[in-house]
Length: 166
Length: 33
Image 1 (spheres, rainbow over the protein chains, first blue to last red):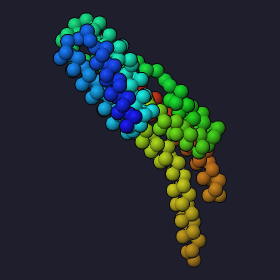
Image 2 (cartoon, each protein chain N blue to C red):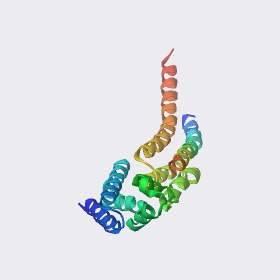
Image 3 (cartoon, one colour):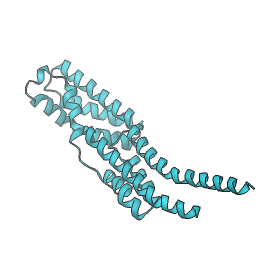
Image 4 (cartoon, rainbow over the protein chains, first blue to last red):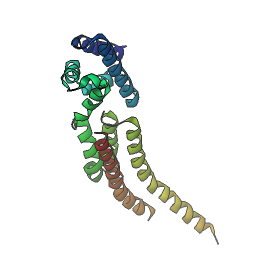
């Protein structure tokens, strides 16, 4: 599987780059990064090549992780997880995220119905949000779109039952 | 009549829905960072 090959290749590079660390720390760092990758993939809800590449890209180069691990003062007593978890937080807004927000707001005004749907498509293609966040955003749009239909059905039922009365 | 009401609802609620979803996504993303 392509995703597994990418992860194994990344971890191999990490292990090679981690030569300044002692063997125990190196094993621990690789295990922590592997765990982080697995949880990120599980959270994204997909395990395809694109998702895996995005997760690895957010982690940064293996050399950077090792450099942060080696260079951080007092790193001997710290868990490698602290270093690894902080790296994705540095990432800025990507094109998909900006397009998603733009279509959900401006697009909804100029392209009623179609705009938010395109926005949701960008939301689902973006990597910035978890699957749960994507479902909540979809639910918000869906509920507020379904409301007028239910309202209309209520009006139709109410008016038709009203007409049937003598 | 019903069609007019539906049209008004769609024109009002669609942007509201989009903006509400966008606000949620922006807030949760910032919290994540």
